[in-house]
Length: 115
Image 1 (cartoon, rainbow, N blue to C red):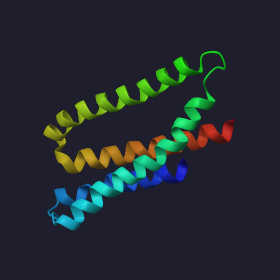
Image 2: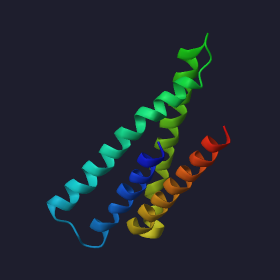
Image 3: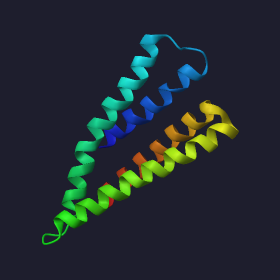
Image 4: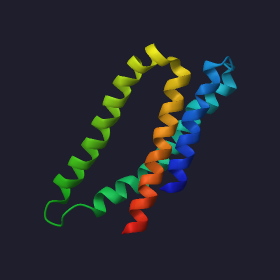
């Protein structure tokens, strides 16, 4: 989870390249494929952790609630990114997103160490 979280942070930061003029098709493919690949790889342990934190008799409900919170949070963040891009430009948005991802990785690493 930590490794893929770090890779997602890098993949998000790669999206700064097109905002500064590197817009060739291979760069765009690298950015898009890199983010989708790392996100997909991070989903596996994330979903496993959600299932591990579900109660025995209510696993279906608990898991569904956790996943719904994750995806609604993603939708809200995506909605806010447009407003941020308007005021900060896309370079700022991708930099903030990458930093927030790194903070999330550090938080997960700390919480996993505590348990």
